[in-house]
Length: 212
Image 1 (spheres, one colour):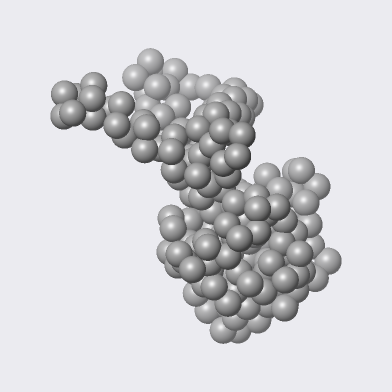
Image 2 (cartoon, rainbow, N blue to C red):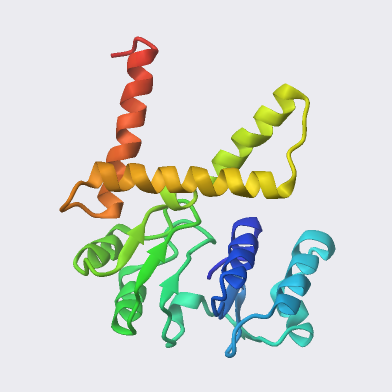
């Protein structure tokens, strides 16, 4: 996991709920590396630091079980990661980084940031079809979807419980995944399915507006 903003924080929370071993978060100055995995207590400290106290990760090293590595990034570490979640910034994963990840047994890459994987790195992923690669337009669509839920609640002057929003979000993401697989067809990748599904939605909207 890269980044330590909202996308990264809540992706970490969900992964912890699923029993995953979250080993990194980062900011522009370095990486917090959790050799034995982030704990819920670590996560609480990170959220307090970022959302309330506005601290850098280096300032909370003594409060968490991780070690802060100055000047590094998750993608420069020579560690074995099953899954990569770039949630920090554009172009953060380059060709060298992704080759190292693939060499260390990467199973999947899911984009939380906007365009975090450079074009050359995307080509490396395409050369390894066994690796699951889902671009941000699909993997991070939940953020836009929940904003839509918020607009719906505001328009109806009502408030859904957290559990209701989470259930609706799960249904939304399941539908998005179905659209990806349908667009990709039997021989296509999830990445190509995301691109085709997104392009089709844009074309349909332009036709509805009479622009085509």
